[in-house]
Length: 124
Image (cartoon, rainbow, N blue to C red; front, side, top):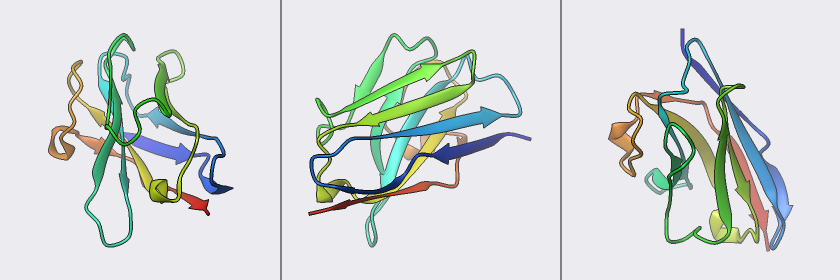
């Protein structure tokens, strides 16, 4: 059974940094693209970042480009999202997702497995 478990969320102040992690289990994901999405109250889930199977290709939403960095450790079946210079607008539940393809996508429907989410709250 595939499981994705996010961790590392919390309450931080504007300008702070936070790293969220997602540990995958149930199968090997070294040939799969992985992504991070977020959903704020009353809003649709939106793309944040994605990384291809090798880690050599990354994509970012314009709103986080230059502030967030996605990375992965295939030996640990884990994907990370380093978030710097956090703003109140980054407040959301952050979800990791796995796509059964080596290629990244920004589309929510392209991902096959999802974690339960971790809350990130940025206070002003």
